[in-house]
Image: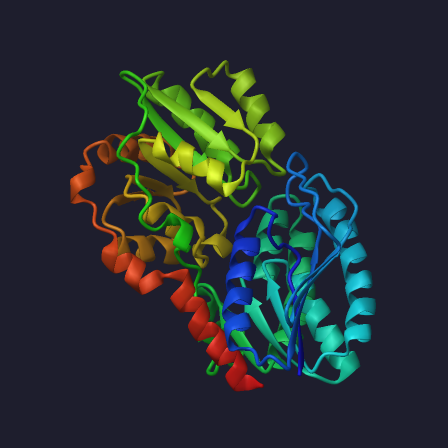
Length: 395
């Protein structure tokens, strides 16, 4: 049997999608028969313009094969990313025809990776499994809502039609947030046999020793590490908070994305000098920044679609045993309240609420933070093992 796994991002790319993909591949590789083959069709690292790592076009590890496709650079814009994806899709389609797989897996925060999976499955006459990481029809509709009501409705109907076709014909569908079920059920899609395998805690983050941290005298370091895009809305919250709370707090942002330049321009325009922005770094380097942080920061934009998601960053932050300040609403808030006592939430975009949350977070004592139960429940390795078992049960 030959299995093809479509994932636009894969290590050494730095993003939630690539970390989830490699974890699933590791779990699948432990279950796959030696006479069978697992082919990963992905891209060369392209998530961030200022983080490019050279890797081979093809890698073989016994019966696990990684095929990397070179795609044009993009600057984070919608049309630029669409053009980049089309290059990946064309090459992936040709490659999958040569491999002639028996089963397909598609992971999608990008809906079109899922659509690619469905098209290839239809053309080759095989079944497929979808790992659904966001609700694209609702997300893109929310993004265009303020710009054009017509485009917002048009995109929602168009992409929902594609989602409906894709998900209804899949042998199996998994969602990374339980908040997704309500949306699709309200749209009359049967989710009875869908599964919920969320993101989790990677083994690299377990048992990290932060006892010998550096500290800024009389200054608290508040760290955000991740994408700086429309979804996160960092540019809409951080400048106002930094200005309001004062220079006793140092905000460190590590990442890049479509809204990076906007964030930088606002900081310069308002003469804010307690915010530092660094380019993305490897995970190993990121540990040092985590070590020296006092508070970890997270924010999602105030869009209806984001009230259903469960950011992977929550799992990463939680086990670092540092206070967390998170601006989000909906399912994520409930998950945090039920599982993470050392996190304080505030409403998306609420500057005053964020300032209050930061002040409260300072009161947390490290000795009072216990993450053992959380790690046992949300170990990525355990979650992906169960997910791999489920996928093989569909074959």
